[in-house]
Image 1 (cartoon, rainbow, N blue to C red):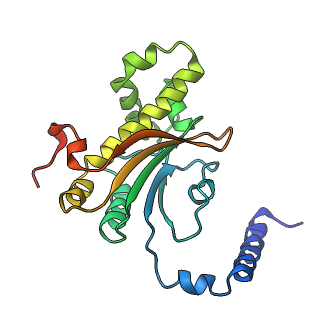
Image 2: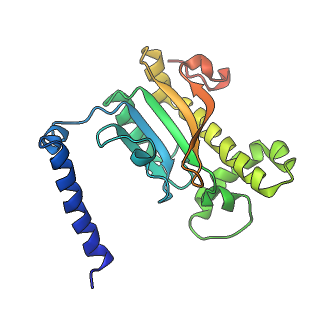
Length: 211
């Protein structure tokens, strides 16, 4: 019986064959390098594959994923990806994409103890605390959950703009826009939260670095 593991390898061979059938030089061109216009910061949830849901081929999306699409200023993995994307790849757009039904956000609405991840969830709880008055006023639990997902994305967009990486790029006049999206797993559609930051004036003055 074919195992799941072996099936993955077989699927890879089929995918390669399909790509070469469409374009015999597909991998030859990919191997020359990458210059994606977009950095995607998304959730690690297996139902939210960055390239697929926006119909982007390999080479167009630089991706960083973690639990609940968080931008945490002590996260060296996220910062390293951001620095490389902005300063080396010169991406023009950074999109934070959350999704309705996010397990990390849902856990942050409770007092559950789930182990090591409690330390990560605490950062999401901070977002709830910042917006507690609005969220507590929403009686319907599903609507409150959905709104929390949206507010979490919005906070992460602003947290990106607070980094020296983004602010230095803007100071240089680099064409760089930071956006917030939410993906709906139930229907496959993306909601643009209409929160886009594109210069240092987008930030509250207290966060602007003296560059």
